[in-house]
Image 1 (cartoon, rainbow, N blue to C red):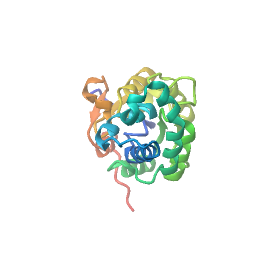
Image 2: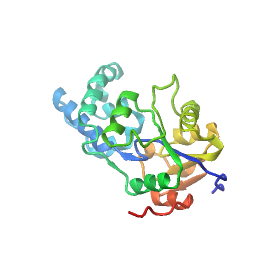
Image 3: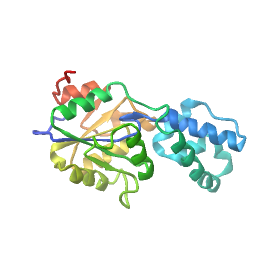
Length: 226
């Protein structure tokens, strides 16, 4: 474990698989598309494992035999179906709501850096009530590049008004750790997310945590008194 920087001012998070368990909604959209296309639906487990790779990876679970051009053609309808059901079955991971409350109560700023398209990200955080709480939201198409490029992380720091050297980046994917490290943030890999089939202990993160409460403890954030 690498020691925390002094005077932490901000915490940036990946969205899907780190703050939100959005796989149930993504799977529901796939089931709807399978019904439309009269294709047997795949089981949930292999879909959940690949959701962090994006819509094409999810579609490949059901339509791989059709080839990549067909997957590309199916993607707009899939995203529409996902938008229809977004935030209906998804949940924050256990401990995330408490963690965010502690971050805010401690006077720290928090934000989101995701590879999800902005039209989905913005609508999702509006539906779950985070639009006015997050100090910065950077989506996969906010810039010409996305994670693992560090530019979205640096933009989020700028928008949140925090210095990278006084901030953490928290994610459940190797790309999160690569982006955060390249941007100069303290990197936290979390084992509670999707992981894209990988082992977070091999990603070179400054620390690996197993539960959001451990991040609150690391930052010495006291419980919020109701």
